[in-house]
Length: 268
Image (cartoon, rainbow, N blue to C red; front, side, top):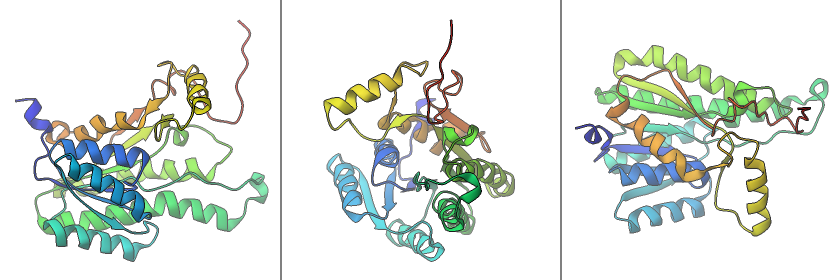
């Protein structure tokens, strides 16, 4: 009975930023739970690889290349989902990337700040707005899941990124209050230090191993570990959860780890 609540059979789920890293891991897990997957990002080659992997494993998936910072392209993404599968049940607004410009706070350029907000906050708004409109038209509810960052809960030298990701958390809470009367739930995933892919060489493996020693879990997270959480939030197992944020960081925040550009020194 309990395990049935996690079944996503025939649910249509779109994952933006699904061509690599955390989005790829979530898309694969959602497919394994029975969902029909639409993966979307800017890079078609990456999308083709994800679709091939899902289909070869017996899943049902398609890809749509788009730019999440362009609202008209987001609208086209939703239209593509509906054209292929007839509906949209769950949207994972995962597109976004850390960037930033090296400059002092008082000299930080407008264009760089605007770009970070566009990539990591406005894109989430565009995606969730378009998805919610489709879900309301369908009339039987839906699920919105956003992706923030542990840096949103701390200070950071690359301040536009945590500023935008902090806005994602607030947006998610606001969507929960506005959309629950339509049967639409809204929750946020907050990853900490999570590897986006397997290490490419021994040097990178050692670096990750050393960095993980500063986390209570004593290791970095792996990209695939977000999959089970994604399935939970997309499924009926989380039917009474909305407006919440789920930190998955191996205890990094609890342990006081902050990516601020230097390692604190302690006297014991």
